[in-house]
Image: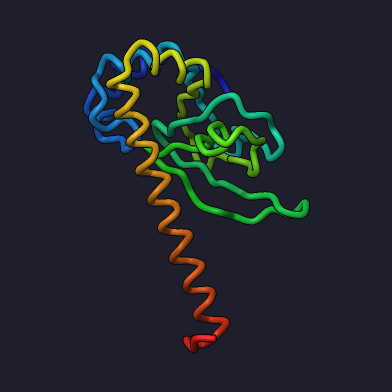
Length: 167
């Protein structure tokens, strides 16, 4: 895993690349550039680990390009949870929930992410409250989509177990 220059990446990929990302949607370009400049931008090769279950949480990540697989750890066993692709965040729930990472994130291919620390998140709240509100709305919307997916999975599993009969 190596760091890359966020401003150079902005210029290479162009503003439209970032505007189309769900986490950064509707944010001013200057705010996204600030997040890239003040955050850490990481490039991972295929199979590199971004973080591991049990790691302390002081930040979250936004996938800029590529794809990460998330493996959740329970009872010292790992199960594939989902893929995270361009524009999606990972680690926000753990950062807000103040708990250690519950999973391990592995790059499926060359992947670039920006790491946004809790300090950087707070500073954005203080200095750009309107942009912070938009970012928080985007992150909340993504969490809501995840909850909806989990709800659908729970219902499907319940239906399979009961064969569609109410108990």
